[in-house]
Image 1 (cartoon, rainbow, N blue to C red):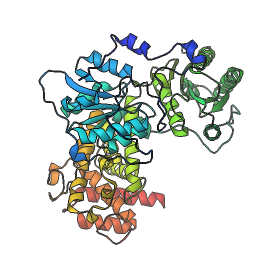
Image 2 (image 1 turned 90 degrees about the horizontal axis):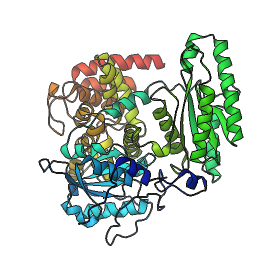
Image 3 (image 1 turned 135 degrees about the vertical axis):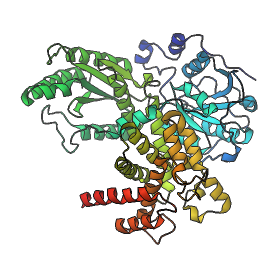
Image 4 (image 1 turned 180 degrees about the horizontal axis):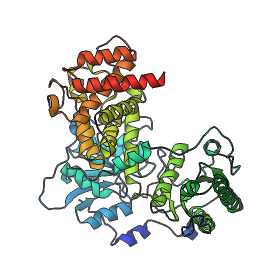
Length: 562
């Protein structure tokens, strides 16, 4: 058994994973890159991930699926002793955080898996190596797997969930690993992240090609330019810069004064950006975008600080200076359009938290965006399921919208309503570990397939409890219970079923009826007929009170849409 060697202290561990600024500017890659998700390319700096003994090369397009019956369940079999963790592909920084917690004994030899309590496998591993490890683990022992996902690695995390992992932990949030062993919630950061994501985007009108005030190209041109560069083989560095307090200025001064301030800022920014050979865009009222194929991380940080100094020279609210938050990402983080810009947005959100000037790069994101990374992985898992599910793409979003509306009618407000909507959005996440032949209508499954299918509420709840909390997990676990007690997994009756789960069941049933995926009706139903079908199921499958609430709410929504 080979025990991992961890860095001796936190700051030293952080420093060990990075080269000097001069080395990066000279064109040398960082020692511990952010890690684009490219199959077969070693971008990991994974510090100790062992190759599976005798593992064969796995075709890049293969779907590696481990029988979920082979995987262990999270539990706490010791009293106070450190948990034994097999770490595969984890960065030295992540290993340092686990080591310093004092809660774990870490091993890096795959042969030790039988003596371990849990496997932590990183998305930083090259895709072929990751798949080889999953194949070996599936045949090795009944040990639960948690995937440690880096920002930009959410797609790989879905593959590990497909292979039967019990949960997702983002880099920087390694403390959550123990809560999987103990079967408890760690925090509710995913709910807070979902609240921010589901709120108003403030992105302005994307149809305009030029901003009326600054005459800069807008968000549409920004995304098109990134896509054009990627298609041409150039991976750009992208940055998002938000002027803190600018929105407040617009509320307290005249429109003319606010427009003049934006023009002056944009002119100053444009001079600085163009001097670096980069391009400037106006993404919305207080946010600018920057694109360059030449800027290094170091030069981008220097540019950001120059822009900060310009911004802080303005004090339109007398004693309050403006501030600038900047987030940026480049080829070390991703080589795809959506992940690249998403990472820059996440970096910007972290930089904006303190409401003062700050710059955050993709390399420094781990702790600040752990909940965002975990939510993104969960949404990717749901998207995978919906590609194969009879209800089709968008099912989770539709169920979330309707569940939130029914919940508001029933008095759900604030965080309770967010928890309900998040649980509805992710209610099918546990299906990601099912074989593809089980992702069909339950009425068409064999007895063995149906048994597997019925495990998905519990698997989804167990995975999401750590980051989304007990309320979300309870709603997901019980969303297949029936009012008359004939549901699963626990056979709960009536008000024994959590209210949020009853609401989700109602919204889920409605979407299946509208999409022709219910299995008990002949094809898709129009909304009036679907509501009549809900009435027929009230008192057996569905809570009669919630069916009445659904009829009121959804009839009003339909009338407004007409």
